Length: 117
Length: 116
Image (cartoon, rainbow over all chains, first blue to last red; front, top):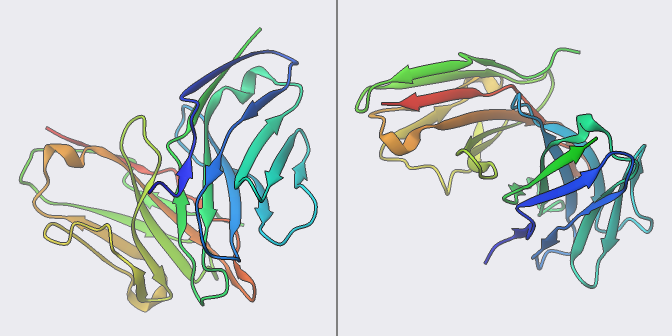
């Protein structure tokens, strides 16, 4: 079974609008972390935001927020006030086994976001 | 703070040849990862080191891929012999081991391998 599912291959949004990128995950581990990364066309992976499974509040980092719904096992990324520079691939990732001494980091297939003027 | 360094940035080889990639993680990061990213897909973990020990290599094609991390710092990933389907970007990442688990992974710029 897929551990991370991103169902949107591509998303389009107009500049200054908000956009939500979907991510669902599958784990039986009670202690895990969820990450979002951005990968521009240049190829580097840029860390955006993190949510721990025990965190009570949704994570926010500037224009990025994570809509964490634990019961539904979803961790959607919300980008407010989109900018042209936000055009990139976005990956959701999960780290399981935070209490096991080591933990793996698994990525979804990604969503391509295109921001138009 | 210096980031994760990888070399070379680009490599073109013929099938059945061998190739090696090098990675220098961020200083003090105990965990090092090698990922394979095929065009249009998400990164797939090949191998994960904790210091100089392997903690996960379940998706490493061990008949042709090998990796080592001597002294728990630099790492090399080797492919021998290469196949056409090995064409991909090879990403190295590192993270800091903390009491509650690892921090986010920091990535290098990757090595783009083309096998012809």
